[in-house]
Image (cartoon, rainbow, N blue to C red):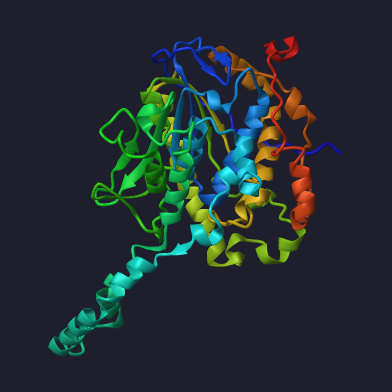
Length: 438
C-alpha cells in the first residue's frame, strides 16, 4: 500500500528588491538570485518541540538542494526558538550537526540538560520572599482599616509581589549560546556576520516588537543574549534584561516576522512553522494514546483545550501576516513549510517537551521530505528562478515513514535516524534534465 505523504501548503507570492553579492561558502561559489533580490529563511517559534521539528525540516530541505544548502541563504530571521537555529545556521553550523548535538554525540553542540534548561529561578524567588514580612504587615493593616471588606481575591492580589517574573531562569541557555558562539570560527556579533541575521523579541514594558540586527542601534547586543531574549517564554522563563529593558519571547508579537525579510529585500522566503492546530476529524492517534484522547479534544481536559486554542491563535496570526505581506508585495515568492492539520505526532507533545526531541526531530525530517516530494511540480517552477537548483534523488532514497512503534524503542529509533536525519548530507553538484524540466 502506498504511504500517505505530508503536503507543504501552497506558497504565496510577494516583491523584488535589492541585489545581493556573490559569495563563497565552504569553497563553493553561490550565485546571487537572478531576480536581483535576496533569499531568506524565516524560522518561527515553537518551544523545544518546534526547535527540533525545524532542525528535521531543514535537514530534509538540505536533501533537496543542489550546489547549495540551507546555510547559503542571504537573510535569516528568527523568532523564539527559531532565533537560536538562525544564529547557528548563519555561523555555518549544518542541520546534521545540530541533530547530532541534540542526540548528544556532537559535544560542541550538546545542549544543556533538562535541569539546566529548567533551572528554578531561585535567586529572584529568594529576593521576593524577603518582602514577605512587609507585605504581611500591610495586609494586616488593610484588614484592620477595612474589616469585612477585603475578599480572598484582594488578599491574593496584595501577595502578588511574591510571585517571580518567571518560574525558571534562562541563565544556562545564555551561557551555552555564549560559549558556543565565541568559539574560534564563530561570531557572537551581528556586525561580523557575512549574512544577515535578524532576531525578533518583545519589549515587555512597551509591548513593542523589537528586532536585533546589525542594521539598527541594537547591533552591539551579543547574538547569544538576543536569542535568549527572543526565547524567554512569558511566565515560564524570567524576562531577559538588556540595557535596562526587559524582553520576552518574540512570538508574543507573532511567531513569524516575514515582513522583516521583505523589508531587507527578499524576493524568495522559505518559512518553517512548527505550530498548527489539529483537525481531529481525520486524526489517527497512536494505539497507546487512543484511550487518553477520547472522541473530542475536551476529553483530554484543560491540556487539550489550551493546546488547540493556543496553536490556533498563533497559526491564524501567521496566515493573516502572510496575507498582508502578499497584498503589499505581490511579487515575492513564499514557501511555507509546516505540519499537516491531521499530524497527531506534533499535536500530542507539549511545546516545551524535552524528552520527545528525537522523535520530533525524525518526524520533522520524514514529514517534510514527503511534503517536498509531493509539491515537486510547484518547487521546480519557483526555486530555480531564484537561482536555487533542486533534485529529488535524495528524498526518493529515504524511508517514507518511521513506524510509531519505533518511538517506544530508543535503539531502533536511533538506528533508523542514522539512515535519515543523522546521515551525512550527500552533496549534489549537478542537476538532472528531468529535475530542471518545467
